[in-house]
Image (tube, rainbow, N blue to C red; front, side, top):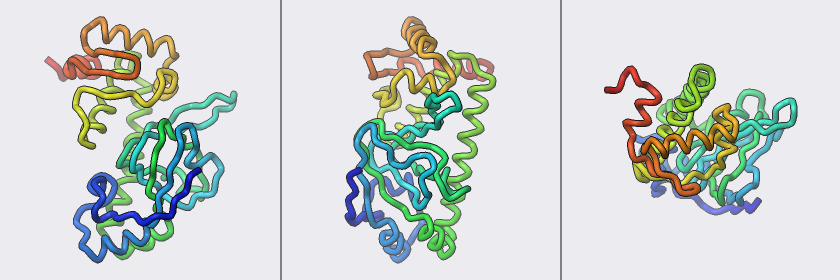
Length: 239
């Protein structure tokens, strides 16, 4: 890994509203700057952290895309999540002081290192920061529950439609298009995450194209009908 100890200015970072709490005053931001004092650059295909590694920091994704995955009993990699710019990863290590999954860069990426003991100490001083850390943890719990619902009760078409809607919504919050995206993950990785075979993922993409809901060119996807995807996921609430 390419580790660079360079100063990070949270106060002027354009991702501040996504990964850090709003409402901090100048003095609080300065103290946070001193805690989040370095960045790490991670090459595509390289792990930011691995299962069993001692937990020491949370990481704010500054650029790039990550997948988190675990190895199943039969040796397969099971994708448990995808994480993008402005999101915090590494929360899995808090419980047992070591990481319970691998975090692998899907493209060249950069993260801000947030030493957890210092973040924890600072959060006791700033209630705004403490509340934000709790919100991040709660969001991960909600996301886990959503994935369990996805895998437990949805058909293949519903799973893929919900995945695309969630992905484009998260990207739009970061200033990207509401209808166009480049998939950083492979079809196989999408299938692993959604509990679908590769053939099923490909067949479902093809059906969405045939139904004129999306346009696909390799990893480029254009959503032609957001309502069409919503209709697949939740038909009872769509006209």
